[in-house]
Image 1 (cartoon, rainbow, N blue to C red):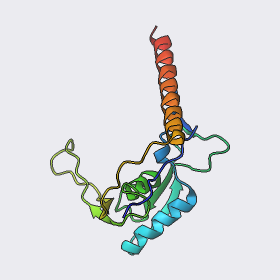
Image 2: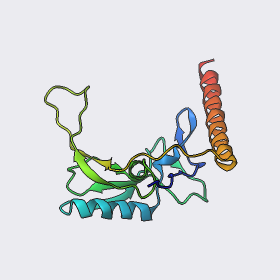
Image 3: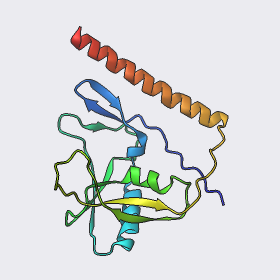
Image 4: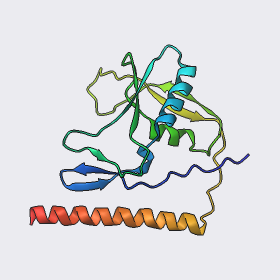
Length: 172
């Protein structure tokens, strides 16, 4: 059975860095409803965990900037007891839909391994979606998806050129 491909809507949100605006990856974004849904899904598997839902604001110096028509934010789930690292909802949804919307799978606790860490270091486990579905065939590129891809690539290239120009001006 094939499952519908999960397409992430583009965004004009950006990260205001010291080098200027950096386009935000749209897969980081989610709505508050999606955050609550993911929290409920995980809590049904791990009822002993209590989740707090929040929004990652960026930093004081480099905040996330959202256009007025963007209803998604960098939604984050925090485990009340601190036993898991912060869980970013947008990438979790992307993981769930890696084989299409509705493809079967389950959240599992997986040990976190950092090869660059000092010997004996321990880290909280993290959640990972384990799919039990066969990946769908690649989606056909229609004129509308091709145009969307072209717009995303052009926006990314324009932003990169702006950053290069700013960096060149600072160094020049």
